[in-house]
Image 1 (cartoon, rainbow, N blue to C red):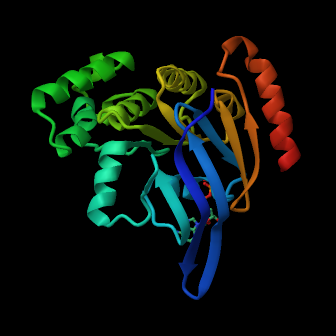
Image 2 (image 1 turned 180 degrees about the horizontal axis):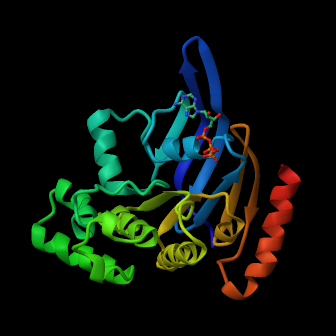
Length: 252
Ligand SMILES: Nc1ncnc2c1ncn2[C@@H]1O[C@H](COP(=O)(O)OP(=O)(O)OP(=O)(O)O)[C@@H](O)[C@H]1O
């Protein structure tokens, strides 16, 4: 089946300026992200992975190039258009989880949907169904500080999904979790991807990278290579882990 690009980026550049110094974090990247794929971005620390995620998701402005989302150019959007785009089209999971500390889990999850102006009853129903899918329904009325890191991360995933985004971006979603919590989060993402949710995930973890249909390796702000896989199958994870391990080791 021919894959359709949900994101198409050409000649993507990001230069950070600090004082008189300039740092070229992303250098002339051409990249397509495919609809329905579980795309993983790997690379050394400082290679530009988070920056790339910010640019592809419209969370930060590009220095040069063009970014298209579902064939619509987004890098020329004004502030209102980009805020609207972020609220409706994308979900974003941050490594630091970032829940509002004095809101309960269900309030945190519901917040983006209230902001988008959806009716209260509808929001609650959707939030509860997401919490149920993430097995955190029982913790709905607790503050983030009264739940585990894994439960908080699952709430952050639910929050990213509440407005049914066309694509979900995740920056090291298992980075702050222990092994079992990490696997639970990856299983949720894999399950969502099976239901055709497009996902782009940055990770350092080879076990997490095994969930990918496509692995993009970033080196010094450029694409260092791309690996393509069949859909994830738990029975072949060891083979895939070996393939990714030798690929990544060869790149470092
Ligand atoms: N706001 C900024 N100002 C200046 N330089 C920055 C800024 N943000 C990032 N950088 C630099 O750009 C480069 C890429 O950063 P980025 O966070 O994208 O890397 P990364 O691959 O995600 O790293 P890590 O795996 O450590 O999270 C790094 O050298 C970083 O120091």
